[in-house]
Amino acid sequence: MSPQPPKQKRKKPRRSQDDIMANAFLKTAFKPVKKAMTMAYFLDIAGVMVLVGQACVLVWLFDGWFGSFVQGVPLPDGVVGSGLLFNLGLLFLCLMLRIAIGYGRDALLSHAGLLVAKSIRQRLFAKLGELGQARRDFGADGALASKIIDEPDYMVGYARFHVQKMTAVTTPLILAGCVAFYSVTSALVLLITAPLVPIFMAIIGIATAAKSREQMDALAQLGGRFLDWIRGVNTLSRLGAVDIAVSDIAGSSEDYRKRTMDVLKIAFLNSAVLEFLSALSIALVAVYLGFGLMGILPWAKEQVLTSYGTALFILLLVPEFYAPLRRLGAEYHVKGQALACAKAVAPMLNFKVKTGGNMVINLSDAPAFHLHNVAVFGDDGRVRLSPISLTFDAGKRTVLMGASGIGKSTLLQILLGFGDFVGDVIVYTDGKAMRYDELDMNVLRMQLGYLSQSTPLLPISIGDNLRLAKPSATDDELVQVLKDVALWETISQLPDGMNTVLAERGGGLSGGQGQRLAIAQLLLQNAKVWLLDEPTEHLDSQTAEQIKALLHRVSNAKTVIWVTHDKVGVDFDVVHDLTALYQQKQQKQAVYHDK
Image (cartoon, rainbow, N blue to C red; front, side, top):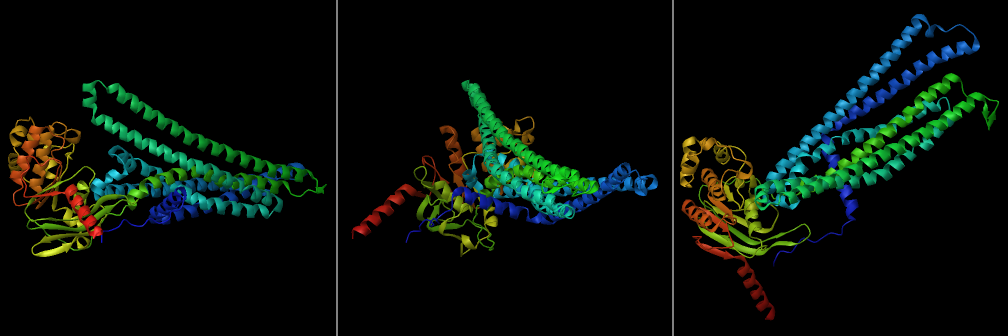
């Protein structure tokens, strides 16, 4: 029975599902720094206690001066002479403590956020290595570079938001309790107006998250376009099309600028609304206290409900009551950016790569591979490789052909251990048969040679590029493999020889020379299995024939699986035409159903 695509579960609305996933991702990502965030929270509470103490000292001083002036009595001991100096010292101590607490809190949260961003960036780099060619499902190289290098930085501020979210609840309650001790009405005014802040903050925050996601998408698109144009700058110059590239990059830059300004507009609007609500609430309390001091409140005429000292104490605390709520509003903008970033990186980090088991395999000889009813389905159920059964004999050169999109490259990725699949892949070596599900894929992958259409050469010296395949290789070994691929004569004539530094993507070598250098890497790796994904696809016919002949010469006694559209010039032992195999399978099924 052919494997079927996984059944699609009934999904929640996409937006809600993405938000749930992003919040869960952020919660997990910041779990390692939970202790630092808890310490920062307690520092905030300590700062509130110091603030209340500072307000008490100020009220004591001003109430003493004012009472003495109004009542015409001598100044109390605490507001003159040594008492004044002592109280001023207390004020200075409270001020220094608040500064130190604020600095310590910010340092803890910044360090925690940077640790998380660094961890996510490292995980993204590691996942990039695990994905292999499947990384293309998550964007072009430029977009991936932006996702890995830039986007984790947007998560740094989430630590501040998380702590501020708790502080915005605790601090107002503590201050409201202090106010209620002297004036229950003032405390009720504060508690009634306080919920307006998070309500407006949530309304504006929803728009912030959406705009931040659009901003990051625009940045990724700009990075991808810029990288693509830079790669083709020589062709653009030759065709006189540089202006087209400049215009396109300018358009992408302008789009990114507009989206950034949209985010800033919302952030400023958020701040303005919060400041207005805070000022209005403070004014209400101030008016109530003023009328209470004058005894002209409608429900308490000719009654002084509060003293000057009490009113001053309350007015000193009221702005601090709203301060954490205003800061939470500012940090909500940061939360929107963190959520947008989480939605961008979480799918890549959560992508399940088939890791197999713990069994270690050592390919001392060329192995054989058997695929039994293997199929690959996308997350949406789309067929990427129809069910197929194939055998690749040990030490044989096998050509894999078929129409574009039929799954040839996907099949190679399965053999490399990348991506998920349905069915069984079995490797035969040393008289043993082992299923991929049982093997440690990282160990197996290190013993497989892979050559693609585009040579992955780094902007380092030729010698260092070769040593990527075998770090312990001596200069004599490098010279020998370069001779084996008929490249030593060319490289030896360069001024710096093997120390010649290549430009990006192997710049400085022709396409054929780059492929020869990649083949030299394969020889140094000395893998018993070579997986060749159309290695001559973008070469001219003469160079392609030379590379084909070279590969035939140096791949003797290896298990070679060569994906190609054109088998002309390829010396092979076995040919598997996937298109023909699928047609034969369909014909057999049709005959079976007719019976």
